[in-house]
Length: 478
Image: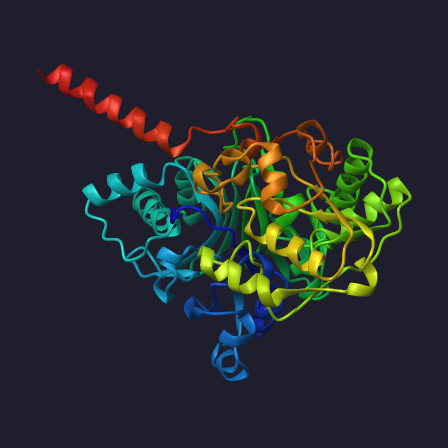
């Protein structure tokens, strides 16, 4: 799997008075744990001195009371939870990344994926930059440093660096005196702004993290916007933003975000409920009970039940101490976790015609296992409905869909998928409907993994363009 594809969560807080901000970051990261379970980290700014701790593992395991007590009070702090791939799962790739430089120390973390990563890294290496990680964030760090050499302003350096980035990023940068938040110009992934009762300003990947830190949601950071937090409060930089279509990842509503989050003005729970209703209209079936796969299938199952009139039931029990199978690096790990993550409630499904609602089918492994569990529990019929269209294209913006070869919908026909998964019928949310599940959001979703229409040049296209440029240069030099 490519090391470019990761889904993560960021959290930052700025206060006018020194506080135990590491605790607030801890609570925020706990709320964002669903976005990354490989590693986590926290950096605190204490009068310009950056103190940090990061390691592989879950937030509750890494940040014990002893570790948190060693982090000082400060006026700014930031944290990160990371999902990576099996190839780069190590402490060295954990974020936030702390960089020491003659222009000043800096810490960075982000959620997303930079599509021109290799192009930028090659350029930086040729200029003498030495890389110690496999992460996009180190490329961003060197770009900011390069720009800061040319300008004395850290926020101007961030703005200039962001102008060179293609792809998705919700970025936090901390210097000795400022905390900076930036969202890519297409707004692929969410970034929320909030404020506590004490006046502390908070930014986080999802609004549920603001709730955990006892901050109220003020608004979403706009696509292309850069926010600067310092002792004077907050400033918004927007003059540099170009006008491009929005491309919010629709999979945030389908799967990634917590149902209690609000993204770009739309409640995730409502969007999933609406997806279930669309499925009920598109794929009616005679059945006795509607059940959802915990957690992201439950809201849609309720919507399906309400629209269809079929009773909703709890048919699968989730072991809450097991992480998500979809973001578990490695196929073997995914299969192992499915075996102990879910258990059917036989009294709900035994002898029943069951409508099973899930958020997506990527590889098909998890779905087939769940269907077998329900069959063993006595389900008479299983009609599977999926709140996403079929995945038939890779994603380059942060979702773990690295290659078409692993996608069951690409490799098999509809009839073959029905047989492989073991269901009586199968229905996917229509592409036109998935674009309407969150109609309160501004127009513009990225649905490239469903329709192959990418909002930016893909890495392959970038590489091809670079190769053509090199050939052209050789011709001119002949």
